[in-house]
Length: 315
Image (cartoon, rainbow, N blue to C red; front, side, top):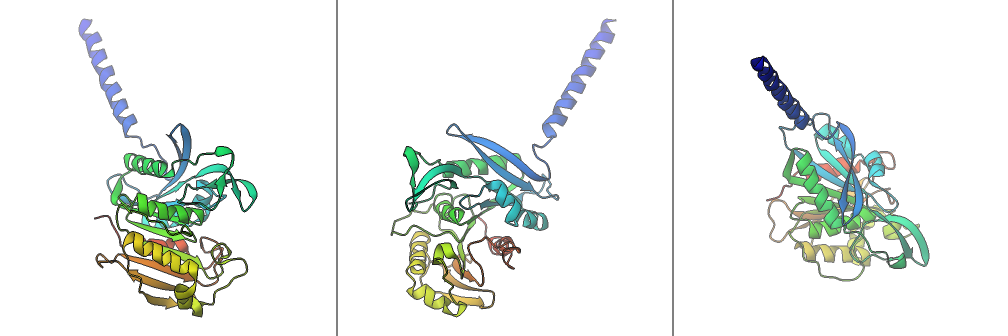
């Protein structure tokens, strides 16, 4: 009888251990759309992750962060940016964090709106609101993505649109130890001259439409034939070149390539030029203040950005 009881206990323990191992092996995700939260400085923050259907834990994958613009959130850009589709075809994990929401005053108007905590914003926070630490948040998300998935740590990238493009510049300065390359889409840089000490000299691509009302002004359309003139005479364009050259050690002379019917690009080489590290300014014909996704413009920004990003990796 004692032997029977002992045998039963052993069997139960073995079954319990097997069940535990099976439970531990179950991943905390589904293929496709996932929503996660994390707590930073007592604030609950959210981010969305698209896991491609070909994901296999034995194969480390690249990761791309996509930062939304003002009024947006992570779920909106999960749906409209085109990155989840690129993630499926290219086997890339894509991540869509949400910024904080604040009361701000801008040009005498008070708004309740989502914003990233960018360098030197052109608005003020209402009632003494303190912006969230978005760099701390994004670093935590990188850590959690690495813990949850099989990630190629040398191939983490970041793109941002509008206010998210402004945040992308801050990430290029303060997170370049983690990020291989950055795309600023329609996101300006601070209007005054400031000194930024980047953690690493990083490749950067800056993109805008030739009819982007937010960057160029309402009703302004720059003829594609005036692209070089824009670079050499427009204060905004000259300022963008100056800040990037000084911050990430790029030359200020450039070569223009592309098709004026679609897009033109000025390429600035790194100092010293190695590993094909460059700064690019691109102007897209017929694009307003949008992240191009094949619907609001014939261009597919995610596809274009990925083709450029994927050549880079952390040293």
